[in-house]
Amino acid sequence: SPSQGYYTRRGGVGESGDFITSPEISQVFGELIGIWYISEWMAVGKPTTFQLVELGPGRGTLTQDILRVFKQLASVLSKCDVSVHLVEVSPKLSEIQAVMLTGGKVQPSPEHESVYMKGISKTGIPIFWYRDIQDVPPGYSFYLAHEFFDALPIHKFQRTEKGWREVLVDIDPEVPDQLRFVLSPSRTPATQNFIQPEETRDHVEVCPEAGVIVQRLASRIEKDGGAALVADYGHDGTKTDTFRGFRNHKLHDVLSAPGTADLTADVDFSYLRKMAQGKTATLGPIKQREFLKNMGIDLRLQVLLQNSGDTATREQLLHSYDMLMNPEKMGDCFHFFALLPHHRLVRPDKKDKPESKSPLPPVAGFNELLLK
Ligand code: SAH
Image 1 (cartoon, rainbow, N blue to C red):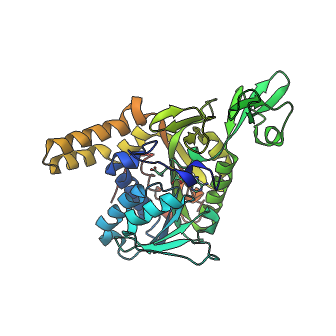
Image 2: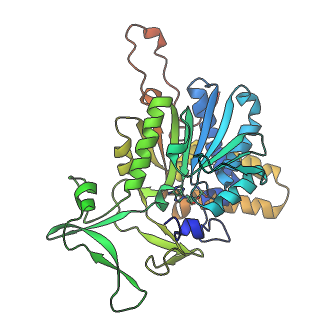
Image 3: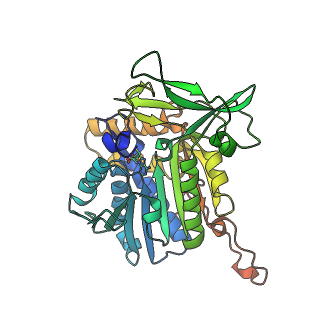
């Protein structure tokens, strides 16, 4: 809801908020993602310009860690024109992002412009804010969606003896101010449009908004080039009832005090893959611990441990590594998924030029990182 929704009213990402995310746990997470983009940029022959487009940037920590990597690799990127484009609906979080990334030096844009704020990062890169991915200008782009798709609204469906029914939210007639779940008495437009004919589960959650956004990303990548990295907790079309709420880091009844808790549902990567189909190739989902391992997290940890003098910092580094990588913590339930142009994975047939058939460089993260 634009007026009463959680992200427009509260949006409590971080230790003092309602839920904590990987970039808020460790700087290494964002650094390795920054290296993923550099590695893809090199693999396609170092285009002279690219946009980094983040959907739902939260506090801006992930972008900040990525921009630090870009600064450290300034000599590699020196001839490349980089800009940052943030898609954010929350006025409160966009303010926090502006302070984090620019030190607060931003200008609001005139009402009629689709970009609502502009600034320059502390590292000298132009940053633009939008409310919708459609407003981001076209061009070669690297997209990022970390814990974004799980925040978008879902439809819930239940298989019954009479066929599929939609799970709806109703006002409880017995208790004032109390919401309850009910089943639609008959089929609804959503049951008719969003359930796949081959569906075998009895309970299904579908996020059509995620489908539309993935279709848009795929079209943009097909037309202008680039790649999208999606990281979230989720499954590959196997889970059923995952809808839940978080408030002050504790599970919260989704039906009580709407707008005050973070509502979330696992991302169905099989649905995202279906939505991208035809336009781009996809990789993953691969478990977070495998992706980060392939990206060299162990080596990065060793370097940070060697460079840190005090015990408290070392303990903090080891603790955050464990949070990200432990299969019982975030290591197994979070996954990485990528959209890439078809030609990034399979070379177009060049029968007449067999000499140009050198192997394509592997995509980092989904394979071991090889930076030359
Ligand atoms: N990526 C961040 C934050 C994740 S929380 C991190 O990992 O820490 C989800 C983010 O998506 C918030 O920034 C929220 O304001 C934003 N968001 C939620 N719904 C959105 C929508 N429909 N369009 C754009 N941003 C949205």
